[in-house]
Length: 255
Image (tube, rainbow, N blue to C red; front, side, top):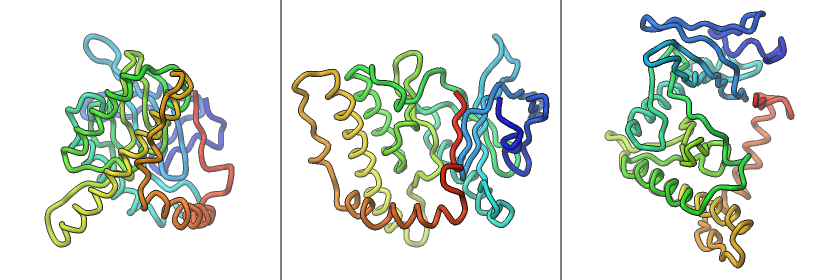
């Protein structure tokens, strides 16, 4: 259970001193099992509610800015939460994307919890795991969505069933009709290429440990955008982020 300084997940969500947090929504009561993670932009908690045939587990995803600018940026984070929920709805029904639940308040929503572990904590997945992950990504792309955050292995769940699952669509990007729709489509196409590059990179780096003589291919898929991001975007982003969040204090993961 978190220390006292971590009991406040956002302005609207608190963990009581006894370690409990109950959320009442649509006639159901969701009770805190444990916090899962919090960083500068979100807090994630494992919740449980009663239902047939027994207790059902959900993830509560809360979008907020953790730090001195929380109140100032609250309207933006509320929008971010609604936007992520809309993208989950577009991808709902894809095997490998957790089924979506309800929106809770202005800046949170629920989706089903996947029993398993994150890919960054595993080194024993089979080659077909990445074929299945490629199929999930392909189906997400078919619905006009670019995942964008594929570089992070902690966003890929290895389920207890051995299958892959994608979580966290907070910075994903999708096509929309309206003004400049052509530009959005071009950006989606560009980001989808990056998704495929990072998938190949994860596959190569993990399978080379277990398959003798495995030929890596991710360098062949490396794009100009990847090189620009590494050189010109990531470092300025980290510098700006430190204005909002102290170094070494932006991410806590509860196992």
